[in-house]
Length: 140
Image 1: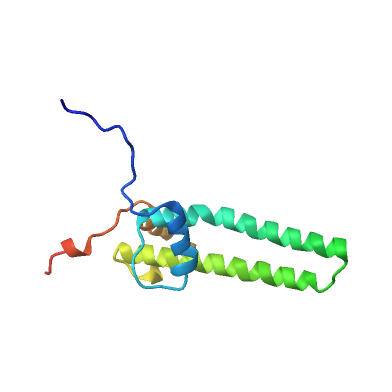
Image 2 (image 1 turned 180 degrees about the vertical axis):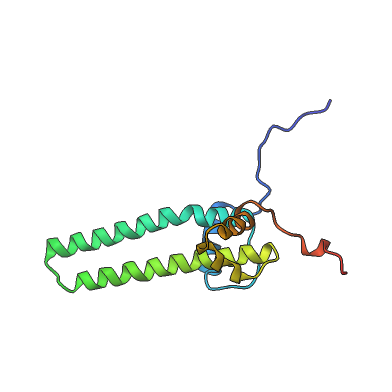
């Protein structure tokens, strides 16, 4: 008798932690290549959490500075905060550039995110439009 499968699975070979590791560690400085739609969603979705952790680390270091009276800890705390902040934003921007490459667009389209009404087109390409299969494109 035919048995229906009730298991819900994602069509991914990687889990969320593997995607986060790729986004923020292994591929954070790589502008070439492609990124899947789910990778872009996980990267942008985790951005708020990582920024929140960054702010909490800053608050913790400043609290230690005020309790212990170590004056040099304040500029070190702010330096760590800005380094982590820039690193995280750069990782997400390179992820979005790789996502645009997956849609067969140049990474320079990322600049249109600051232009009103043009950013809707870029958001569509980044988060709604599926991946292009380069192998299925026929030569003209």
